[in-house]
Image 1: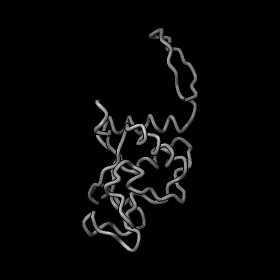
Image 2 (image 1 turned 90 degrees about the vertical axis):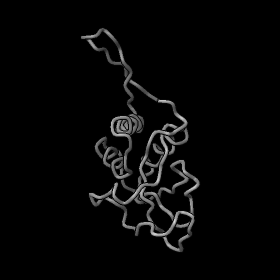
Image 3 (image 1 turned 30 degrees about the horizontal axis):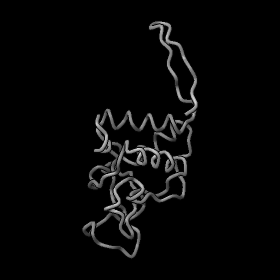
Image 4 (image 1 turned 180 degrees about the vertical axis):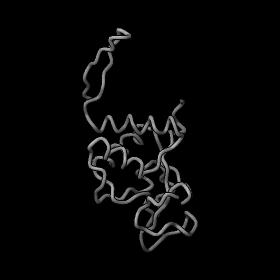
Length: 146
């Protein structure tokens, strides 16, 4: 992580701030999960856009990419239209077991922000012959002690 050093004159301390926007996005995601208990995938895109990172792209995030391979079934998509930068940040956070994706209900996305896919209607064990949306939120990984 590249960083710049800043000095807090009131406290007499120095602090390193990341200069890479992807690192800043990681910190923002962790802060949101810390403050709210979870973050939705559309909220990750909003954070990325606010930082000036590309938030939208052509990538589909599969459940296994977010750390819950038991839901990685044929046809299930956790989120669609993600940029490579956002996908990379989420991949690094899940790889280091800082966050994990978990299935949730459509109610978590009740404000209407959702991918343009039909939502899952069958049990998770089912297979689909077309892409369907598995509503997903990100939480701290249970393997992390916080």
